[in-house]
Length: 420
Image (cartoon, rainbow, N blue to C red):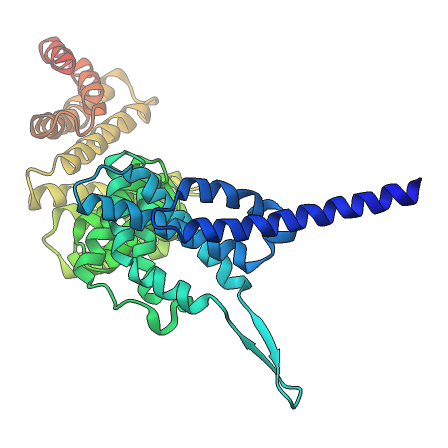
Protein backbone atom coordinates (compact mmCIF):
# COMPACT_ATOMS: atom_id res chain seq x y z
CA UNK A 1 0.00 0.00 0.00
CA UNK A 2 2.81 2.43 0.87
CA UNK A 3 4.49 1.73 -2.46
CA UNK A 4 1.29 2.39 -4.36
CA UNK A 5 0.79 5.64 -2.47
CA UNK A 6 4.31 6.72 -3.27
CA UNK A 7 3.83 6.01 -6.96
CA UNK A 8 0.54 7.83 -6.93
CA UNK A 9 2.16 10.90 -5.37
CA UNK A 10 4.89 10.76 -7.96
CA UNK A 11 2.33 10.70 -10.74
CA UNK A 12 0.51 13.62 -9.14
CA UNK A 13 3.71 15.68 -9.04
CA UNK A 14 4.48 14.82 -12.65
CA UNK A 15 0.97 15.74 -13.59
CA UNK A 16 1.35 19.14 -11.92
CA UNK A 17 4.57 19.75 -13.81
CA UNK A 18 2.98 18.81 -17.09
CA UNK A 19 0.01 21.03 -16.21
CA UNK A 20 2.32 24.00 -15.70
CA UNK A 21 4.10 23.28 -18.97
CA UNK A 22 0.71 23.25 -20.63
CA UNK A 23 0.00 26.63 -19.04
CA UNK A 24 3.10 28.07 -20.68
CA UNK A 25 2.01 26.69 -24.03
CA UNK A 26 -1.51 28.03 -23.58
CA UNK A 27 -0.18 31.44 -22.54
CA UNK A 28 1.97 31.61 -25.65
CA UNK A 29 -1.02 30.72 -27.85
CA UNK A 30 -3.21 33.37 -26.18
CA UNK A 31 -0.49 35.93 -26.74
CA UNK A 32 -0.47 35.16 -30.47
CA UNK A 33 -4.09 36.13 -31.15
CA UNK A 34 -4.96 39.47 -32.73
CA UNK A 35 -6.31 41.02 -29.52
CA UNK A 36 -4.67 39.23 -26.58
CA UNK A 37 -6.28 39.22 -23.14
CA UNK A 38 -3.13 40.33 -21.33
CA UNK A 39 -4.70 40.27 -17.88
CA UNK A 40 -5.78 36.64 -18.36
CA UNK A 41 -2.32 35.71 -19.65
CA UNK A 42 -0.66 37.36 -16.65
CA UNK A 43 -2.96 35.45 -14.32
CA UNK A 44 -2.13 32.17 -16.07
CA UNK A 45 1.59 32.79 -15.71
CA UNK A 46 1.44 33.58 -12.00
CA UNK A 47 1.20 29.89 -11.16
CA UNK A 48 4.09 29.02 -13.47
CA UNK A 49 6.29 31.65 -11.79
CA UNK A 50 5.74 30.07 -8.37
CA UNK A 51 5.66 26.37 -9.32
CA UNK A 52 9.10 24.78 -8.70
CA UNK A 53 9.03 22.96 -12.03
CA UNK A 54 8.56 26.06 -14.13
CA UNK A 55 9.87 28.83 -11.86
CA UNK A 56 13.40 27.81 -12.84
CA UNK A 57 12.60 27.79 -16.55
CA UNK A 58 13.76 30.90 -18.40
CA UNK A 59 10.82 30.52 -20.76
CA UNK A 60 8.39 31.29 -17.91
CA UNK A 61 9.98 34.66 -17.20
CA UNK A 62 10.49 35.42 -20.88
CA UNK A 63 6.78 34.90 -21.55
CA UNK A 64 5.76 36.93 -18.49
CA UNK A 65 8.06 39.78 -19.51
CA UNK A 66 6.86 39.72 -23.08
CA UNK A 67 3.26 39.87 -21.92
CA UNK A 68 4.11 42.89 -19.74
CA UNK A 69 5.63 44.84 -22.62
CA UNK A 70 2.79 43.87 -24.97
CA UNK A 71 0.28 45.04 -22.36
CA UNK A 72 1.91 48.44 -22.47
CA UNK A 73 2.01 48.40 -26.26
CA UNK A 74 -1.69 47.57 -26.51
CA UNK A 75 -2.59 50.40 -24.15
CA UNK A 76 -0.34 52.81 -26.04
CA UNK A 77 -1.98 51.92 -29.35
CA UNK A 78 -5.39 52.59 -27.81
CA UNK A 79 -4.19 56.01 -26.67
CA UNK A 80 -3.08 56.87 -30.21
CA UNK A 81 -6.56 56.33 -31.59
CA UNK A 82 -8.30 58.27 -28.83
CA UNK A 83 -8.99 55.36 -26.51
CA UNK A 84 -8.96 55.49 -22.73
CA UNK A 85 -6.85 52.61 -21.42
CA UNK A 86 -5.95 52.31 -17.75
CA UNK A 87 -2.61 54.14 -17.73
CA UNK A 88 -1.64 52.89 -14.30
CA UNK A 89 -2.26 49.27 -15.26
CA UNK A 90 -0.24 49.58 -18.44
CA UNK A 91 2.52 51.33 -16.48
CA UNK A 92 2.55 48.54 -13.91
CA UNK A 93 2.75 46.07 -16.77
CA UNK A 94 5.87 47.63 -18.30
CA UNK A 95 7.58 47.70 -14.90
CA UNK A 96 6.71 44.04 -14.39
CA UNK A 97 7.88 43.26 -17.91
CA UNK A 98 11.24 44.83 -17.14
CA UNK A 99 11.61 42.90 -13.88
CA UNK A 100 10.67 39.60 -15.51
CA UNK A 101 13.12 40.14 -18.35
CA UNK A 102 15.89 41.06 -15.91
CA UNK A 103 15.31 37.75 -14.13
CA UNK A 104 15.24 35.91 -17.44
CA UNK A 105 18.62 37.37 -18.42
CA UNK A 106 20.23 35.59 -15.48
CA UNK A 107 18.74 32.23 -16.53
CA UNK A 108 19.13 32.45 -20.31
CA UNK A 109 22.02 30.08 -21.01
CA UNK A 110 22.09 27.28 -23.57
CA UNK A 111 25.10 24.94 -23.53
CA UNK A 112 26.09 23.16 -26.74
CA UNK A 113 28.92 20.74 -27.46
CA UNK A 114 30.71 20.63 -30.80
CA UNK A 115 32.29 17.54 -32.41
CA UNK A 116 35.52 18.16 -30.52
CA UNK A 117 33.74 18.18 -27.18
CA UNK A 118 34.08 21.93 -26.65
CA UNK A 119 31.28 23.47 -24.61
CA UNK A 120 29.79 26.69 -25.90
CA UNK A 121 27.35 28.84 -23.98
CA UNK A 122 24.74 30.73 -25.95
CA UNK A 123 21.54 32.59 -25.17
CA UNK A 124 18.10 31.97 -26.59
CA UNK A 125 16.00 34.98 -25.62
CA UNK A 126 18.46 37.64 -24.48
CA UNK A 127 18.86 39.40 -27.83
CA UNK A 128 15.12 39.85 -28.23
CA UNK A 129 14.70 40.95 -24.61
CA UNK A 130 17.54 43.47 -24.87
CA UNK A 131 16.05 45.02 -27.99
CA UNK A 132 12.58 45.20 -26.45
CA UNK A 133 13.84 46.93 -23.30
CA UNK A 134 15.96 49.40 -25.28
CA UNK A 135 13.08 50.20 -27.67
CA UNK A 136 10.88 51.03 -24.68
CA UNK A 137 13.27 53.55 -23.11
CA UNK A 138 10.99 56.56 -23.59
CA UNK A 139 7.97 54.49 -22.55
CA UNK A 140 9.48 54.10 -19.08
CA UNK A 141 9.62 57.89 -18.89
CA UNK A 142 5.95 58.11 -19.91
CA UNK A 143 5.07 55.47 -17.32
CA UNK A 144 6.70 57.65 -14.69
CA UNK A 145 4.48 60.56 -15.75
CA UNK A 146 1.36 58.37 -15.52
CA UNK A 147 2.36 57.13 -12.07
CA UNK A 148 3.00 60.70 -10.95
CA UNK A 149 -0.42 61.82 -12.21
CA UNK A 150 -1.95 58.97 -10.18
CA UNK A 151 0.17 60.03 -7.14
CA UNK A 152 1.92 56.65 -7.09
CA UNK A 153 5.19 58.43 -6.44
CA UNK A 154 7.32 55.44 -5.50
CA UNK A 155 6.52 53.79 -8.81
CA UNK A 156 7.08 57.07 -10.65
CA UNK A 157 10.57 57.12 -9.14
CA UNK A 158 11.17 53.51 -10.20
CA UNK A 159 10.03 54.04 -13.80
CA UNK A 160 12.29 57.06 -14.24
CA UNK A 161 15.14 55.27 -12.54
CA UNK A 162 14.93 52.54 -15.19
CA UNK A 163 14.81 55.25 -17.89
CA UNK A 164 18.10 56.70 -16.59
CA UNK A 165 19.80 53.30 -16.25
CA UNK A 166 19.16 51.89 -19.73
CA UNK A 167 22.08 53.51 -21.64
CA UNK A 168 24.54 51.88 -19.23
CA UNK A 169 22.76 48.56 -18.68
CA UNK A 170 25.33 45.89 -19.45
CA UNK A 171 22.83 43.17 -20.40
CA UNK A 172 21.56 45.32 -23.30
CA UNK A 173 24.96 45.17 -24.98
CA UNK A 174 25.09 46.88 -28.35
CA UNK A 175 21.33 47.43 -28.22
CA UNK A 176 21.67 49.88 -25.33
CA UNK A 177 20.11 53.25 -26.20
CA UNK A 178 22.21 56.37 -26.70
CA UNK A 179 23.37 58.33 -23.68
CA UNK A 180 20.82 60.75 -22.26
CA UNK A 181 21.88 64.45 -22.38
CA UNK A 182 22.92 65.90 -19.02
CA UNK A 183 20.23 68.55 -19.26
CA UNK A 184 17.56 65.84 -19.43
CA UNK A 185 19.23 63.66 -16.81
CA UNK A 186 19.64 66.48 -14.30
CA UNK A 187 15.95 67.43 -14.46
CA UNK A 188 14.86 63.79 -14.39
CA UNK A 189 16.98 63.03 -11.33
CA UNK A 190 15.73 66.18 -9.63
CA UNK A 191 12.11 65.20 -10.19
CA UNK A 192 12.92 61.69 -8.96
CA UNK A 193 14.21 63.28 -5.78
CA UNK A 194 10.93 65.16 -5.36
CA UNK A 195 8.93 61.96 -6.00
CA UNK A 196 11.00 60.00 -3.48
CA UNK A 197 10.79 62.75 -0.84
CA UNK A 198 7.03 62.99 -1.17
CA UNK A 199 6.81 59.18 -0.93
CA UNK A 200 8.94 59.30 2.26
CA UNK A 201 11.75 57.45 0.48
CA UNK A 202 14.51 59.61 1.92
CA UNK A 203 17.55 57.48 0.96
CA UNK A 204 16.28 57.37 -2.63
CA UNK A 205 15.62 61.13 -2.53
CA UNK A 206 19.18 61.76 -1.36
CA UNK A 207 20.57 59.55 -4.13
CA UNK A 208 18.49 61.30 -6.80
CA UNK A 209 19.30 64.85 -5.65
CA UNK A 210 23.02 64.02 -5.56
CA UNK A 211 22.83 62.71 -9.12
CA UNK A 212 20.90 65.80 -10.19
CA UNK A 213 23.67 67.93 -8.70
CA UNK A 214 26.36 65.88 -10.43
CA UNK A 215 24.64 66.40 -13.79
CA UNK A 216 24.33 70.17 -13.44
CA UNK A 217 20.90 70.84 -11.97
CA UNK A 218 22.28 73.70 -9.91
CA UNK A 219 22.34 74.96 -6.34
CA UNK A 220 18.83 73.77 -5.56
CA UNK A 221 19.91 70.15 -6.09
CA UNK A 222 22.80 70.60 -3.65
CA UNK A 223 20.52 72.28 -1.12
CA UNK A 224 17.93 69.49 -1.31
CA UNK A 225 20.58 66.78 -1.20
CA UNK A 226 22.10 68.41 1.88
CA UNK A 227 18.68 68.58 3.54
CA UNK A 228 18.07 64.89 2.88
CA UNK A 229 21.52 63.91 4.14
CA UNK A 230 20.91 65.95 7.31
CA UNK A 231 17.56 64.24 7.93
CA UNK A 232 19.25 60.86 7.48
CA UNK A 233 22.14 61.99 9.70
CA UNK A 234 24.53 60.81 7.00
CA UNK A 235 27.61 62.84 7.90
CA UNK A 236 29.73 61.43 5.06
CA UNK A 237 27.14 62.43 2.47
CA UNK A 238 26.76 65.85 4.08
CA UNK A 239 30.50 66.36 3.93
CA UNK A 240 30.69 65.46 0.23
CA UNK A 241 27.69 67.59 -0.75
CA UNK A 242 28.81 70.63 1.25
CA UNK A 243 32.37 70.37 -0.10
CA UNK A 244 31.21 70.02 -3.70
CA UNK A 245 28.62 72.75 -3.29
CA UNK A 246 31.06 75.23 -1.78
CA UNK A 247 33.75 74.49 -4.38
CA UNK A 248 31.23 74.99 -7.17
CA UNK A 249 29.11 77.88 -5.89
CA UNK A 250 30.96 79.32 -2.89
CA UNK A 251 27.77 79.41 -0.81
CA UNK A 252 28.66 80.22 2.77
CA UNK A 253 26.01 78.03 4.38
CA UNK A 254 27.95 75.05 3.02
CA UNK A 255 30.92 76.18 5.10
CA UNK A 256 28.76 76.28 8.20
CA UNK A 257 27.58 72.77 7.43
CA UNK A 258 31.12 71.49 6.94
CA UNK A 259 32.27 73.04 10.20
CA UNK A 260 29.30 71.48 12.00
CA UNK A 261 30.07 68.07 10.46
CA UNK A 262 33.70 68.08 11.54
CA UNK A 263 32.74 69.24 15.03
CA UNK A 264 30.31 66.31 15.30
CA UNK A 265 33.06 64.00 14.11
CA UNK A 266 35.36 65.43 16.76
CA UNK A 267 37.80 66.79 14.18
CA UNK A 268 38.11 70.35 15.47
CA UNK A 269 41.37 70.99 13.61
CA UNK A 270 39.76 70.09 10.27
CA UNK A 271 36.81 72.35 11.05
CA UNK A 272 39.17 75.22 11.87
CA UNK A 273 41.18 74.57 8.70
CA UNK A 274 38.03 74.73 6.57
CA UNK A 275 36.82 78.00 8.05
CA UNK A 276 40.27 79.63 8.01
CA UNK A 277 40.74 78.76 4.33
CA UNK A 278 37.31 80.18 3.54
CA UNK A 279 38.06 83.43 5.41
CA UNK A 280 41.42 83.75 3.64
CA UNK A 281 39.55 83.63 0.32
CA UNK A 282 36.69 85.86 1.54
CA UNK A 283 38.11 88.14 4.27
CA UNK A 284 35.18 90.58 4.09
CA UNK A 285 32.53 87.89 4.54
CA UNK A 286 30.51 88.49 7.70
CA UNK A 287 28.95 85.03 7.75
CA UNK A 288 32.32 83.28 7.80
CA UNK A 289 33.58 85.31 10.78
CA UNK A 290 30.36 84.50 12.64
CA UNK A 291 30.77 80.80 11.87
CA UNK A 292 34.33 80.85 13.14
CA UNK A 293 33.14 82.58 16.29
CA UNK A 294 30.61 79.79 16.88
CA UNK A 295 33.34 77.21 16.32
CA UNK A 296 35.74 78.87 18.77
CA UNK A 297 33.01 79.33 21.37
CA UNK A 298 32.00 75.66 21.05
CA UNK A 299 35.37 74.62 22.45
CA UNK A 300 34.53 76.14 25.84
CA UNK A 301 32.49 73.04 26.58
CA UNK A 302 35.48 70.72 26.20
CA UNK A 303 36.55 68.78 29.24
CA UNK A 304 39.79 69.78 30.88
CA UNK A 305 39.78 73.42 29.77
CA UNK A 306 41.04 75.82 32.41
CA UNK A 307 39.15 78.97 33.37
CA UNK A 308 41.82 81.01 31.62
CA UNK A 309 41.47 78.98 28.42
CA UNK A 310 37.69 79.33 28.49
CA UNK A 311 37.95 83.09 29.01
CA UNK A 312 40.42 83.38 26.14
CA UNK A 313 38.15 81.38 23.79
CA UNK A 314 35.15 83.54 24.71
CA UNK A 315 37.14 86.72 24.08
CA UNK A 316 38.27 85.42 20.68
CA UNK A 317 34.72 84.42 19.77
CA UNK A 318 33.38 87.83 20.85
CA UNK A 319 35.99 89.57 18.71
CA UNK A 320 34.93 87.47 15.71
CA UNK A 321 31.23 88.26 16.29
CA UNK A 322 32.07 91.95 16.57
CA UNK A 323 34.03 91.79 13.33
CA UNK A 324 31.11 90.03 11.63
CA UNK A 325 28.78 92.84 12.76
CA UNK A 326 31.19 95.50 11.51
CA UNK A 327 31.38 93.78 8.13
CA UNK A 328 27.61 93.47 7.83
CA UNK A 329 25.32 95.33 10.17
CA UNK A 330 22.35 93.31 8.89
CA UNK A 331 23.79 90.01 10.11
CA UNK A 332 21.18 89.26 12.80
CA UNK A 333 22.89 86.04 13.86
CA UNK A 334 26.22 87.79 14.48
CA UNK A 335 24.53 90.59 16.44
CA UNK A 336 22.72 88.02 18.58
CA UNK A 337 25.92 86.10 19.30
CA UNK A 338 27.89 89.26 20.09
CA UNK A 339 25.18 90.60 22.40
CA UNK A 340 24.83 87.23 24.11
CA UNK A 341 28.56 87.02 24.91
CA UNK A 342 28.63 90.61 26.17
CA UNK A 343 25.77 89.77 28.55
CA UNK A 344 27.54 86.57 29.63
CA UNK A 345 30.65 88.59 30.41
CA UNK A 346 28.60 90.93 32.59
CA UNK A 347 27.08 88.01 34.48
CA UNK A 348 30.52 86.47 34.96
CA UNK A 349 31.88 89.70 36.44
CA UNK A 350 28.97 89.78 38.85
CA UNK A 351 29.37 86.13 39.84
CA UNK A 352 33.10 86.58 40.50
CA UNK A 353 32.57 89.63 42.73
CA UNK A 354 31.54 87.70 45.84
CA UNK A 355 34.48 88.97 47.90
CA UNK A 356 33.99 92.65 47.09
CA UNK A 357 32.58 95.14 49.54
CA UNK A 358 29.26 96.77 48.75
CA UNK A 359 31.02 99.95 47.73
CA UNK A 360 33.46 98.06 45.48
CA UNK A 361 30.62 96.03 43.95
CA UNK A 362 28.56 99.17 43.22
CA UNK A 363 31.56 100.68 41.45
CA UNK A 364 32.00 97.48 39.42
CA UNK A 365 28.35 97.57 38.42
CA UNK A 366 28.48 101.21 37.39
CA UNK A 367 31.81 101.09 35.58
CA UNK A 368 31.86 97.64 33.97
CA UNK A 369 28.76 95.46 34.41
CA UNK A 370 26.07 97.95 33.37
CA UNK A 371 28.04 99.23 30.34
CA UNK A 372 28.36 95.60 29.19
CA UNK A 373 24.62 95.05 29.69
CA UNK A 374 23.81 98.20 27.71
CA UNK A 375 26.17 97.21 24.88
CA UNK A 376 24.62 93.72 24.84
CA UNK A 377 21.12 95.19 24.78
CA UNK A 378 22.02 97.35 21.78
CA UNK A 379 23.16 94.31 19.78
CA UNK A 380 20.18 92.17 20.77
CA UNK A 381 17.68 94.95 20.03
CA UNK A 382 19.14 95.32 16.54
CA UNK A 383 19.14 91.56 16.02
CA UNK A 384 15.41 91.44 16.82
CA UNK A 385 14.72 94.44 14.60
CA UNK A 386 16.43 92.73 11.67
CA UNK A 387 14.81 89.33 12.17
CA UNK A 388 12.72 88.64 15.29
CA UNK A 389 12.46 84.95 14.38
CA UNK A 390 16.20 84.37 13.94
CA UNK A 391 16.84 83.75 17.65
CA UNK A 392 13.84 83.82 19.96
CA UNK A 393 16.20 83.44 22.90
CA UNK A 394 17.19 87.08 22.30
CA UNK A 395 13.92 88.18 23.92
CA UNK A 396 14.64 86.25 27.12
CA UNK A 397 18.19 87.59 27.37
CA UNK A 398 17.00 91.14 26.79
CA UNK A 399 14.32 90.91 29.51
CA UNK A 400 16.94 89.70 31.97
CA UNK A 401 19.32 92.50 30.97
CA UNK A 402 16.66 95.18 31.51
CA UNK A 403 15.72 93.54 34.81
CA UNK A 404 19.32 93.87 35.97
CA UNK A 405 19.42 97.47 34.71
CA UNK A 406 16.20 98.12 36.65
CA UNK A 407 14.61 99.31 33.41
CA UNK A 408 10.99 98.15 33.80
CA UNK A 409 9.78 100.13 30.81
CA UNK A 410 12.05 98.36 28.35
CA UNK A 411 11.62 95.00 30.08
CA UNK A 412 7.83 95.22 29.63
CA UNK A 413 8.24 96.48 26.08
CA UNK A 414 10.32 93.47 25.13
CA UNK A 415 7.86 91.14 26.87
CA UNK A 416 5.02 92.62 24.80
CA UNK A 417 7.11 92.46 21.62
CA UNK A 418 7.87 88.81 22.25
CA UNK A 419 4.17 87.98 22.17
CA UNK A 420 3.56 89.66 18.83
